[in-house]
Image (cartoon, rainbow, N blue to C red; front, side, top):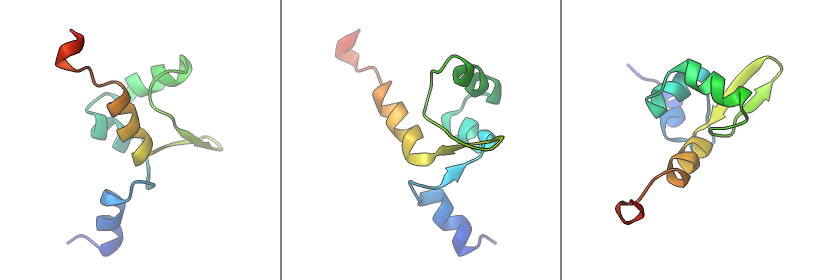
Length: 73
């Protein structure tokens, strides 16, 4: 059974996701996210000491910014 906190974290745009959660959200590998961070590419992230977190809203913005429309082909 999911708690109210777990439900809120799934819908809260400012919720901080772990590297694994962000990779799952984007359907990418963790290694891809790590490589993008080294290259200063990919979605924005938050560094708290050694921990890396991704704000859900930043992931959504990154998806929107990298969506290619059919007319652009």
